[in-house]
Amino acid sequence: MDACDVLAVNDVAVAAFSELNARMGAAPYAGAPPAAASVRLRRLLETDPGGAWVAERDGEVTGAALAFVRERLWGLSLFVVAPGAQSGGIGRELLARAWEHGSDASGFAILASPDPRALRSYVRLGLDLHPALDASGVPRVRTAPVGLRPWEPGDAAWAEPLTRRLRGAAHGGDLEALLEAGLLATVLPGRGYAFARGAELKLLAATDEEAARMLLVDHLARADGEPVSVGWITSRQQWAVRACVEAGLELHAHGAVLTGGEIGPMRPYLPSGPYL
Image (cartoon, rainbow, N blue to C red; front, side):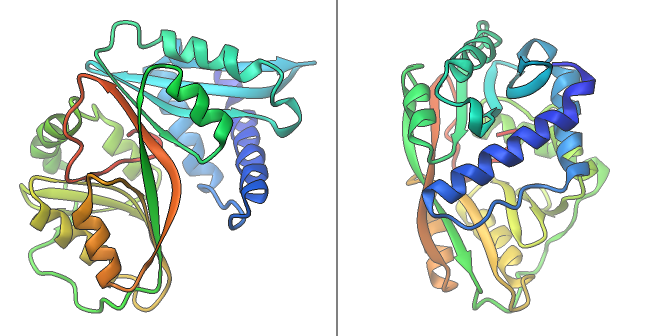
């Protein structure tokens, strides 16, 4: 992948996920704003050029796979093939190259869409599959917990070690990329942080379940009567399941979190789609 491919890769991603949602009977795919998507793609191209691959046909990008390594953790950030080019072997070749980028890694993680073909490919890598839920709806929560504040530059000093303990590797600047992409970050100083884009919770990490619940409830309270969404809730996150049910949100099966090798407990933790 080259820098000139960024816009084309985003177009393929939007087309692929829009087709998937229509095929699965899900709501229309919204995706990140193009400027925010470009921040993600350019960052991964800069930090992990060896994990960024595209497929072309007649000069047009028809697929992409972007993988990264943070310390000893390999993650798959994006894996898409244009609807008209699927089931022809392009995805298999792209995934093989992205997987090879993690040849020196000791831990592995993927956040997978509900596409059966993608899930099958990831399981064949030897990863363990953990079904995931989405929670959505208008929360009944109106009162936010006290003691939380917006993210400050110095928060990375304690947030990075926290992330390392939870997933086996720090984000290494990816949190700053989320801020650059326009996400709002809230912290419970020394105990946890959460990132959101509007009504969508995009990442949550905490030292303990009480802190995690406070961060999640804060996100729900800020909805102010509007619909919200919380994703990537696995069976390891019963604290999140209970908090969402108590707030009146609906739970729906959606995709899976796949892990393997030496990885942290991932609890209490709701991962980021782009950066795990």
